[in-house]
Image (spheres, rainbow, N blue to C red):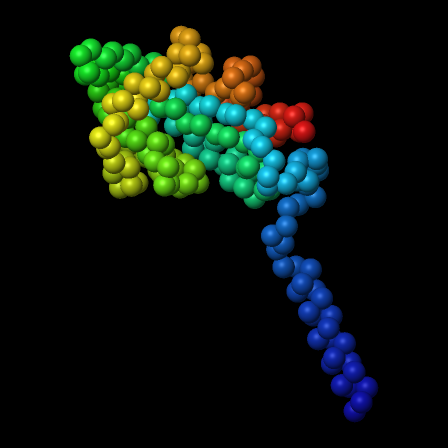
Length: 214
């Protein structure tokens, strides 16, 4: 009888060990650890190594692709690997718009019409809101740019200084880029190099630049 109890106990221990090994781990995979080798050891107090600016338009198909398929998934991975604090991502809606201010009145012409001007303005309002975290802003922008007609349902609204914010985005864009040739355009530490890599493999390119910067 004693041997029977011992056999049962050993069987239970074996089952526990097997279940433990089969349980999915929340820890980064070895492949991901290797990818970020040298980055994971940087503390949360480290300053942003890469200042990333995304100049985009709400109704631009290429902007939609980049934000939904490149930027958002990359940001999710950066958070998972605890390296998001090494990047300062700034979203700047304007693109190939034209802006004027005369006698205190702002006028805009946008590449995809007046509706894009309105949506760019609304995005500028959201981005300027200091009470909303970047995580939440990116979620809302992804929601809006995926289906612009549902922008209000994504939680975005107009604000009293929307025209001023959009006008200032135009000034900022001109200062950084001069004439913009393609939307979206991404700069990393004020450089426009490696645009193709940034647009098509944002995650891989930023990881490469982070590793180089450490």
